Amino acid sequence: MTDTALTVHQTARPHGFPTARHFAFVESALPEPPAGGALVQNLYWSVDPYHREMMDDVPGGFTLGAPLEGRAIGRVVASRTPRVAEGEVVFHRRGWRTHAVVVPEEIRRLPHHDGVPLSAYLSVLGGTGLTAYVGLTRIARLEEGEDLFVSAAAGGVGTATARFARLLGAGRLVGSTGSAAKAGHLARVVGYDAAFDYHDGPAADLLAAAAPDGIDVFVDNVGGEQLAAAVGALRPHGRIVRVGTVSQYNTPGVTLPRFDHADVVEKSLRMEGFLVRDHTDLQEELYDFAVPHLRSGRLTPDETVVDGFEHIVDAFLDMLHGRTTGKTVVRSR
Image 1 (cartoon, one colour):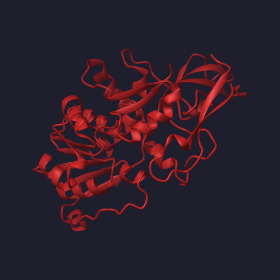
Image 2: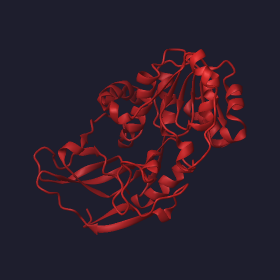
Image 3: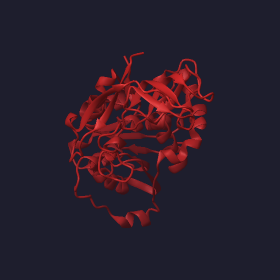
Image 4: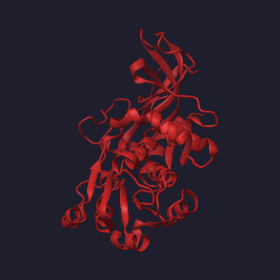
């Protein structure tokens, strides 16, 4: 273990897409854990779309000139509490740094499942997978044979949603993404029945071509025009699961599209958003559902793994610009 630590700070508020100039790597002496705390050397870091929203001047957002927060997995290398043993591998939210000082209440011990890689606890078994699982089982209450449309389908939540929906017995799966190459990847690798590049035309037309008989559930990671298109395509008693609004994160002041609000009433539609942090009680249920499928090979984690903490900002920016597929994870060298 080295005697120095690196953290990433946000240095300015972006307008539109952030760049590397909005971040700084800060070196410091390796911290000593206080009485009752422990020092974790991080092994894996998660970069997520919600980090972009947190970069703005919003309640609970990132503080300028301070280490950024985020999901991470690390090994305890020093402990001054009997409640945390050295050598344990733990999950915590003090990411974007090579080393983190934590107290027992801030960590979750990770179970050991043979054949399951650690990175999976940040993807299909982590907050990304839990978001997809909650969206399908608690918000949409997906029934066997129902047809789904998923926006930002090549991202972490989008790929996990498709994988889980297939295991839950969904019917036709349709996804949208930002390039023809990604659309092909969704169909060939992830298991979507149809996928389209949303740049190719009006979202309503593209969705109608991919799902001519309509959809039952829309899992929305984007908002905007695709949300409006889904309202028109939903069948009676359809459900909209609102996960995120990526289309607005980097385009402040964008004009929001309009949809026929009468559809919501006349088709008895339901729209519900949620925060995954309110559903952490389902973590063990997710393990029970997903781990057997991971072991059997029926479930594959969709991940882009970037080696080296020094590349965490690049990994985040690549994810925002749609240059990655699946869940983006940074791994220590």
